[in-house]
Length: 264
Image (cartoon, rainbow, N blue to C red; front, side, top):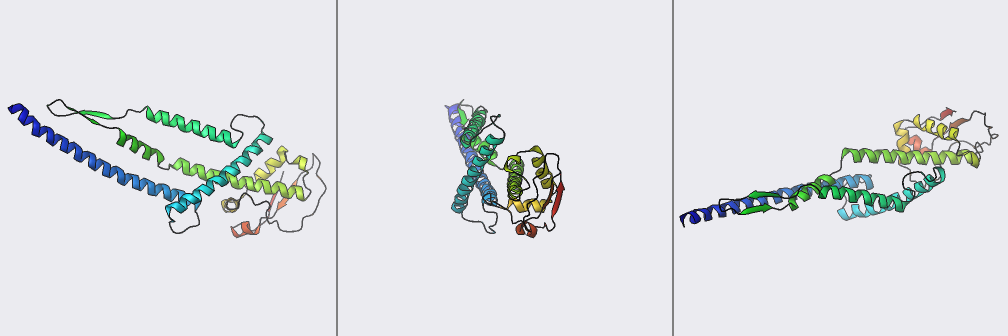
């Protein structure tokens, strides 16, 4: 009787300590969850609302994100179409549906790896032999929050994507100008020398000048080329192509003020 009487209060104190510890941990987890959500919304606002000085409401950010994702999907669909035209049936997805399917498979694989991690931790109680099990719900929530925190790699990937979009816009507009001015025929746009010339011209641009193309919408068809368009004779296969390109007014306002000459 005396041993059971002494074990009873000790077990109750032990339970109270465990409950207090779990309450403190839940409060800390909730505070961390709110901080991570604030960081995620700030990152999302920077991507979808870059010109907004104030922090919009969360529903506005999500609404902008919905429109942003639709625009990116439409742009990705056009890129997949170009890939099918120029690269044929190479490895990798060739349509927007295939990209979605591959993304779902990657997410499912990542979720399965997280589910294989050891879950709850079992701690033995007082002298009465009672096992006090701490559930793994809080641990899994912490892992989810850690995985959802934006990494430096994702930020760098976004920067590379934006620069690549600007390069594609510049490439498209340059080809349109060369075809419209008669420098190239439609059948010559796929030549390797043309691609190398445009790529070399892009590499010669300053970061400010490249940023001017990143701010242009993908639907913009042509740049505001300055000067009258003259129609020179079509170059033969052994003729050197001499390109003198004038940037648009918008590009000039971004820091590009002089024409660029590139010889291939």
